[in-house]
Image 1 (cartoon, rainbow, N blue to C red):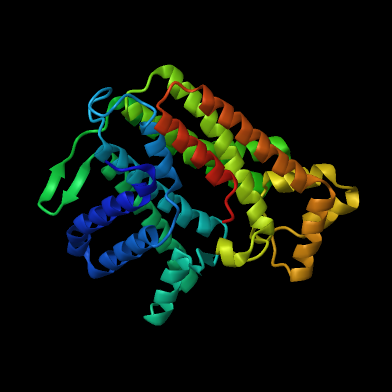
Image 2 (cartoon, rainbow, N blue to C red):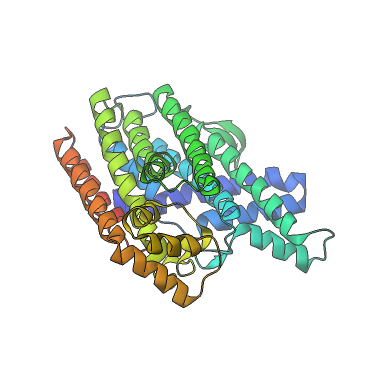
Length: 365
């Protein structure tokens, strides 16, 4: 029996076995495809906190005991679902880094920059940057396809192709909704940046679908649905998950401007440089003076010096935007904790949910 502290390592084992099982398939296509598969495996297995699998497992603990509820309600299935979400996360991160024109992820070159470097090192013809982006897009697509293979129990194993236990329909419905929501939220995000939408409402809408539903709410519900939890628990977990997911993203927004690069693995003030339309920025534009708003607008979407980053941070602090975002984090956490306290679940499930709530809202990276 796995406890929640052991989930990240257990999920890594599932992922490592899945990548190994797929190796013969991509080997048979061509060596360069196998090399790309290795890039994906390294990307997925070399970092990440496994937050989403942890919430799948936390949700799974909120249902009836294993062996009851839906068909396939087993710890193995819960871990498989968590591993599959990590493949969707890999797709999202690889594509995010392209959209954001990021050079580093977790202190290492982003996937598209890795492929760009390969193009240069091997003397390929054509534009190296375009090749890097093109290859990374396809690798992200592969991660998404493999996520569906894993979650539906279809794919190779060391003994050849095999049909694993199928996904229960209630879980499949939530899985489908989650994929649509995260992609829709991503589209809304880039549209807000391109259109220059500075409203707080738009920023929170993106958070709800791009992050909150996908990172916390749907994983919680997927795990609980697997365990056969009732509709009232599923509804309560969605509310809890949205509150925690928004708090998670708000903390990310703060770290994206005020975080230590040594801790975040991203350049200082990265969200400003990338021009992200975060809730923190929206609050700053709404609360500051005309001069302050003009300064903020002039300090987003371009390379910034240390002094310019400091000036933008000053506006966000002096306007009260940072304090308001911190207040929102505390309020969302408080609401989530009240919801957790009201759940009709086991003491273990409640304790783990409370610990996860504090962990994602108070993290430093």
